[in-house]
Length: 265
Image (cartoon, rainbow, N blue to C red; front, side):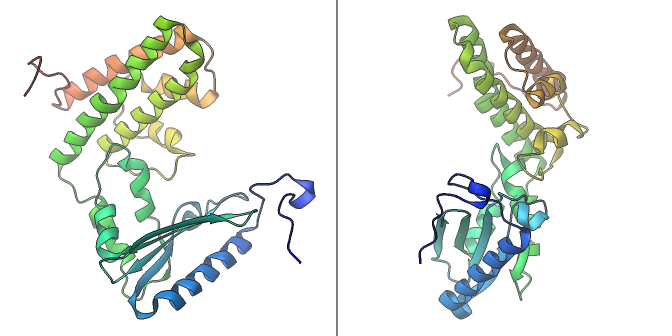
């Protein structure tokens, strides 16, 4: 008899359903066994990342796993739901995982934390602990270059969109823009502090506790955390204050935000 997933516990509608942590770990071990059967001796390691690895998973959390293969040609991603729960399993080569762990991008402080919290299900060669050195294996110059790229390529652009939204009367766009402004500024703070956040749900709170922050960040961040996003003029004022703080912050780090030539190439 096929189970009807359209309603869950207590008559809940379709979609994600609550599960205990034990049930999620049963799913993890089922997937790990399937990976062992499918890949045999080529399987180097299997691990869980995300909230389950950190022990902070909630009733509706999904299952996120990595399978590492010795074969350098391997690169697959499986993402599926059977109704009440969802799983995502990356199947990558050792070389691909090392490359991904060593990626330095504007959202480094959020994405790369997954490699620091991996919970090994199968890792006889102790591969997962070696990924930390790749996550943090960037020079001061490389971090500064990425911080500059984040401030101009991401934050400057979204601040301009905030100003445009106010000028054109698109105030309904402002809540989304101010949330993005806070998010990008939080990424920049993570880069400046060489800090990987525990997860998206707590990164604003974690950023407020870091030492190196630009002036104007705290007020904007707390506004977003409260969800108080209806006053267009206040939003603009806080975004302007943040950008002025960012200019001084970057200057104090020896980072030049603006080009001296109109066209620098």
